[in-house]
Image (cartoon, rainbow, N blue to C red; front, side, top):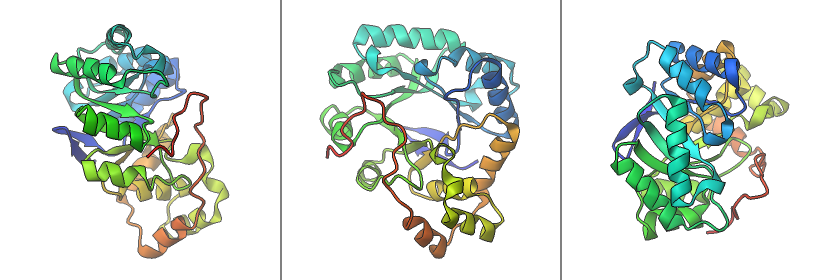
Length: 274
């Protein structure tokens, strides 16, 4: 498994996303992924599946210290006391003494970012999280976190795929050494309707999804966490690690639309804030 280093941690570049996986499905998906060689599992308070992830961590033969575990605090819980309470509940459900990444899941419109990040930093200093970070932060907010508050941000998790460019955010993050974790990296199953991707896939004897993941993972400082419930999908996603795209492939991908954002909650930030 390829890894990248951030805030002193080696993190597998391809992980398993668990959004919308519940109960037995979630438990079995995490166990299957770990048995197959995945070592990066992503969950969140809001997913309501931390208990199932925790059960899988207990039931696997893979030692806890070999698994990179991410969870996140929901945007309505960003006051310091609420973060603490949410974090303790997450640890209980996950049945672990620590997480590897603890992230702010979405920025809140009225949040005190400095106080929220200070609370995360204290959790890190106390050993509850090995590193901290954010999700869904546009450049303006990330600048505030990294440059003004000087928080040790280990990643910014955002929607990123072949149909959604991150031409402002990614170069800024690369300049600051902050990795981008791509969620919804397969554009929520919409890739099959683009013949350009199928053309590249046929050339490489691969699938459109594998091409889309390979495109992400070849970029400097980019990780991806596709959700995959079945063992077949998990194995297929691992196959992206063996693909090597060429200039012709990248040129075709560059022609695809890059403005297709599929995760658009009412509380999303201003993505163009620079």
